[in-house]
Amino acid sequence: MQQTIAFYNIENLFDVEDNPYTNDDDFLPASDRHWTKRRYEKKIYKIGSAIAKIGKQETKHPPAIVGLAEIENDGVLEDLIQSPDLRRYEYGYVHYDSPDTRGIDVALLYNKKVFELLSSERFTVFIEDDYGVRDYTRDILLVTGLLEGEEMHFIVNHWPSRREGETKSAYKRMAAANMVMEILETLKLNYEDPKVIIFGDFNDNPDNESIRHLVKHELLFNPMETLLDLDHGSINFEFHWNLFDQILCSINFLETIPGNHKFDYAKIFNDKFLSQYKGKYSGQPYRTYVGKKYMGGFSDHFPVYILVKKIL
View 1 (cartoon, rainbow, N blue to C red):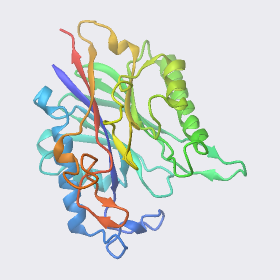
View 2: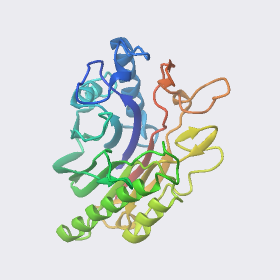
View 3: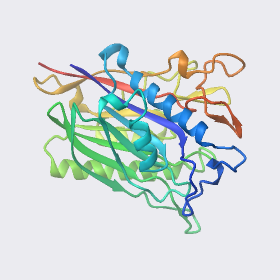
View 4: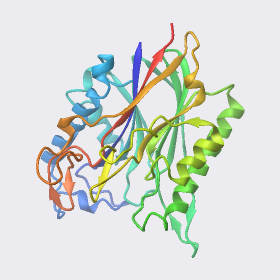
């Protein structure tokens, strides 16, 4: 049986309540963006409907595992798994609050019918600038469980952005890559030939140094390398495609062993309903906001996914 493992940056899934400990002021009813309960509920419905469709054409069922980025708290995850298109599939979730200044975190959804949760842990990426000022970014999430009886480890990421410029901020993403490498080395000490999926919004492309460094030193397989071209990616900036959203696999996903899961193929889930359908942004992700202008779409990212198949 084929299973879908997906990742989706869902662009600022905030509730409408003010959290005094984080910078969520842009997503409140009185803000310039006018983030109202009605808009929030519309976004929950849309994201739930999108997740339910990822890989469904191939497998006839929704994803087994979904890594998520830009989640505010447990409450939005509860609303998401209870949305009309997801509630009947019995999803659970794993989430920890992280030190990110905006209060957005990563999370993992799992279908309880095919995945048994065993353990989870978060890891903080410690970053300082040249002046010793701490940069608070998203934690990295590690989840271990049984997918159709086979033990697997999932590492969910949302690496620091390029807001200061790609080159100037590159050291931050390298710090995140090094933390993932530490997690992988710990898994290798505690498990025999661990089967690992590393996925997330890396804010770097497959050919950037941080990703190449991680793949080379940990002997990983990056099936996303061939998906980025001039006309395809997971996020578009100034009419230029990037593939920041990626799913990396330990090389044992390429082995054919009865009872184990084998990698099948990778895709960007860029169906037309997730895209702008007209105007100069036609074909780009159908966003919730462009600046402060409400568009009513899904996200500024397309989801990505891989299919794995259990060998009989």
